[in-house]
Amino acid sequence: MQEDIILSVLNGKDTLALLPTGGGKSICFQVPALCREGICIVVSPLIALMKDQVFNLRNRGIAAEAIYSGMRAKDIDRILDNCVYGNTKLLYLSPERLTTDIARERISRMKVNLLAVDEAHCVSQWGYDFRPPYLLIPQLRELIPDVPVLALTATATPEVVTDIQEKLAFRKPHVFQKSFARSNLAYVVRYTEGKEEQLAEILQKVPGCGVVYARNRRKTKDLAVMLQRKGISADYYHAGLDGETRSQKQDAWINNQTRIMVSTNAFGMGIDKPDVRVVVHTDLPDSLEAYFQEAGRAGRDEKKSYAVLLYNDSDRRELERNFEQSYPTIEYIRQVYRALGSYYQMALGSGKGESYDFDIGRFCEIFKLEPARTYSCLKILEQAAWLTLTEAVWTPSTLQIHADKETIYDYMLRNPKSDLVLKSILRTYQGAFQHPVNIKEEQLARFLQMPTNELVQALELMSKEGMLEYQPRKDKPQIVFLEERVDPANLTLDMAMYAFRKQRQEKRIRKSVEYATRNECRSRMLLAYFGEEESKTCGVCDVCLEQKKGALHEQRFEQIQNSIKDKLAAGPQNIHQIVALFPASQKEDVLSVIEYLLDEQFMTDSEGVLHWNA
Image 1 (cartoon, helix red, strand yellow):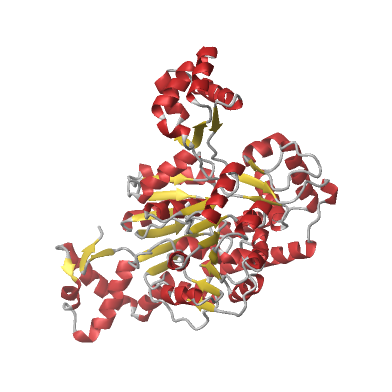
Image 2 (cartoon, helix red, strand yellow; image 1 turned 60 degrees about the horizontal axis):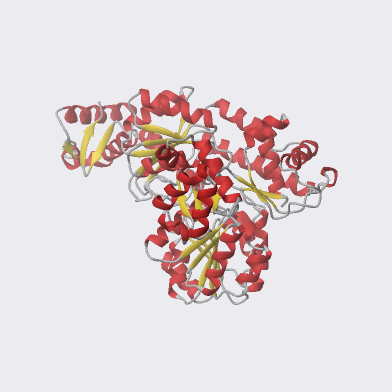
């Protein structure tokens, strides 16, 4: 459907594209951007995805930039200038940056050819991930009135589809919707009290790389260690790790040096890895939107893959507990808001547009707050448009030399302690006079044979005295204050909307539990949730396979299974050879048994050759 979407945009039509995870959404705005003179503005809430796409575009010789929370004002100014006067083809913006004065002024002077809105479901209060800054997009459209908008999402119910078009001020409704059906993806729910044993068994049977999702950080490490002990190549990933570690772990998995990544939902967004064979959820997700998106990271190359949910009765109770924590009292929300003001020493009436590093663990420790409930308060404040909480993104340390060589020489004579540091910088980072260069403090400190903290102090001093500009690395989430700080007693929340969102979330939880417990084709349930009411049974999920097995008399099924097992005990066999063992009248039954044995991993199929798994 990519070509149709691209042609629609090139014909100047406002367009909503619903493509499943792995459906190639980025191409739909990148190609039109290159076809036309000017620049494409891409609104995305995912900083990691923005950085990844900018990196890949630049590697292809395409000028791209990204502006997001935590960047220096001078860097934002430089990038926006390049977009006005240079040849930049794509500018990625986080939504809270849309209506800052500097962005509005520069965008009004840009030759914009397309406005692309990624993760467009975030504009809808009916959606599962509503973000108020998305509601500011129509104001941006007023600056570029003749420019079409392309909204993209992988998850939207029918009511969200309608809401997206209204909120983004579509001139006419216009939707391209590819079926969410994934014929190569087998959805499986396993009811089990022994999740660890079941997980290891699945990963031992299903070859290829995979992702295992767990609800909390501690569990990711525990599961990864358990898998390693069972001889399975595994690592863990969560937002609490420093940026460089996260990057190394992610690269090792992408390059198949690590087979299984055990992660919180912090992992996977924007990662284009086509050969994921299995995604396992060890906890019941709190929405089918989130589950569908995460499970959909399996089998993007359209080869047979599995999305497995391990479920037991405690999952339902855990979801109910989390649900209660997710909607704290207004008094607790005000307590958290008051603590934020104290944490950043913000005066009343100040702070609008400011962004700060945020360590929720440290914050809760200082103010004696409960982390889970505090995080829920921050999300409620975000939905009420008081602030935005971004994901953790790693930005390396940089430095740039501002002084000329004569000034530096004079400075070294007057500051012998800085002499060796400056000489090493001048020798090692020759481009530092022209532009900021990335540095690794630990590496430089080892070379200088000095403690890292002393090197950092020296760099900070030289930065303060104007010799150079030193920016330490960032690897924490950012809080962006969207409004001036008010007295907590005057903090306003729309309680009717609060109640509406609570009701919607309760419904999502019920649907998740229903998915795990109802004896109905898993694919049909998911598709019906997203509005595809007339879909057929998939034939490959655990429910469909059990029904196929039940359609055969149990004794007859076992006879066929045992015959196949005996034949394969002598060695691998071509599937046609196996089918030929039985009368032609039994061909359909034999194929049903083979399909069941393959899906349950009793056998594996290697290009038509069957192997029995011992």
